[in-house]
Image 1 (cartoon, helix red, strand yellow):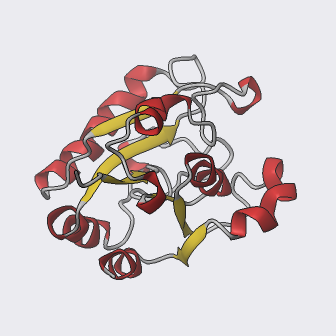
Image 2 (tube, helix red, strand yellow; image 1 turned 180 degrees about the vertical axis):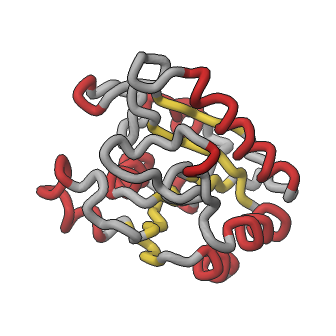
Image 3 (cartoon, helix red, strand yellow; image 1 turned 60 degrees about the vertical axis):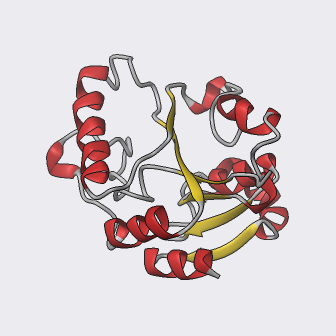
Amino acid sequence: MKKTKVLFIDRDGTIVKEAKAPDYQLDTLEELEFYPEVFRYLGKIARKLSFELVMVTNQDGLGTEKFPENVFWPLHHHIIKSFENEGIKFSKIFIDKTFPHENANTRKPNTGMLTEYITNSKYDLKNSFVIGDRLTDVELAKNLGSRAIFIANDQELGAVEIKSKLEDLQKVIALKTTSWKQIYTYLKK
């Protein structure tokens, strides 16, 4: 039986542009900007390559007064519908709502949300990838036993808490890029 390879894809900074400081929260339609060429090349990945697409995102304090769900969900559904309209479907979407200081086992780079992929032998995690723009996404890849495709727009994002692990994480990065075209070309090989 052929095992399923997975692309665990971050949302903000990876398929949509990262929101600006201070909160890095995408909470208005005016802030929404899709990552350049993501529809073209993630679409090619979805149609031509044999990867299951899974979204994995941290949304700090979602559901709190700081980040109400009625602000998040309409925008999130718009993003998902935009991808579906282009033939790009995520088989599952995992959203962690905690803050970093809570150190929840479900918050990336921890793997609590992805237990089914770790425990189910149908998945080929060794040949799977985490695609993200933060070093915590690279650490998630390491924790899953996968490799990382690092979208290196702002290498300091999420780096403060893991600088001591930086050298170790470099070994996990299969591709460092800012281009979805390069991601597609790499995965096609």
